Length: 471
Ligand code: SF4
Image (cartoon, rainbow, N blue to C red; front, side, top):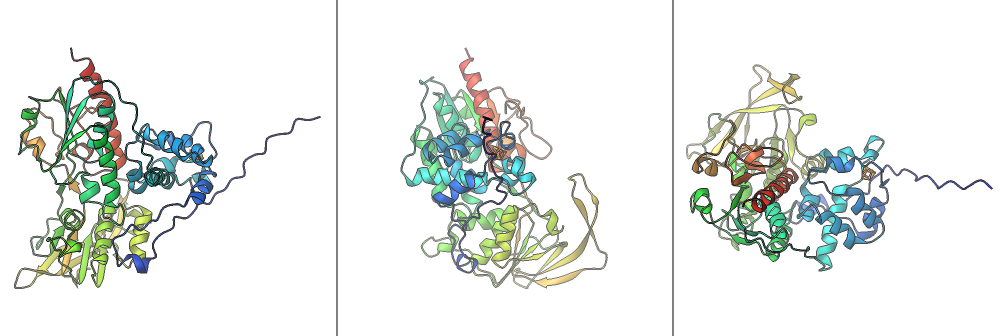
């Protein structure tokens, strides 16, 4: 009798949709928009995975998560093993599952994406992290014996937290120095509550603290104490001080009242809780017509924040077309659903104010797309004589950030790039100083959370080697 062939898995090319708060509801609150997969939906989505023999998804993950592994555990309903698999290489799964651009990384490489929708890897990662938190089953990994080596970490953002996590597990004594009064870096001051609830960031920070990492807040390395003074006490130091220096357009009128960098605008709301005045004594102005200049995730966050603060009209002013928007597609869709008006192919060239110095109008130029530039995107070219003026009473500039200059300025012997970042060896994250490593936005300029974490992992491995071979 002929042997029966195993049944070939039927391809399911459609991913499970993410439940969201209704857009009419959510523009009146700062609660998280995406609600997360319920258990049965997560298992259904995970079941689409083909468990490829040579999984391409893994290659797209900067921290090397065993993606098919955690998906397999999810299909089996063994969520504890699923989250354990992720945490072998990623200390911040609830955060990465929410804010990483998976569509450009693991999901972009998923084989199912060639014919239909790739597996929703980020949503499944979030599901497992939230499941773990909801079930109070946060596990502490096996810790190595103490080495007696002391490590200082500058900055409690994603890179600093990752290095701290890896080095404390390896037995080193780790202390974080954070300039702000709360930990999390850009996750706290930059990304709004409706995209990444702060309770989740605090949960992940507390997890690292529970492993024994010491944290000093309100401690500005470079001012409170320099890197060199810290190195009198510590054996090695990692710099993850981020990219908090905002770019401006350098056009007339940018210093008018009512013109904000996105950094300032979002910090006032996210960190200082300006929207909860008078509970918090740091109110934020509530203008009627807001223009947000830029097209990235920070621009979308600013525009959606302005909507929630009650602005009558919020415009996103972007010099290229919709196809070139650097923001995640789902964030652009959310912004549109919430009523943000996209003024595409539009470039602000001048801001006009009133007699009291408050911004009142923007003069813009219409643009058209020319040849592709060095980034591969078609270059916006001004249409001559197309100038027009639009009334606005607030302008938020969200066109990018440079690395924080304080540590480069106060640490002799550190090699600094033309863009102001610390130069490192990519394979080790070592700087030009023998006992200093660096990673994340202070090296790359504003990049992604997961790439900062990837740098952190590389740095931790190299620092461990250095610390153990020191004698
Ligand atoms: S490439 Fe896609 S289908 Fe294959 S193992 Fe990875 S997630 Fe599953």
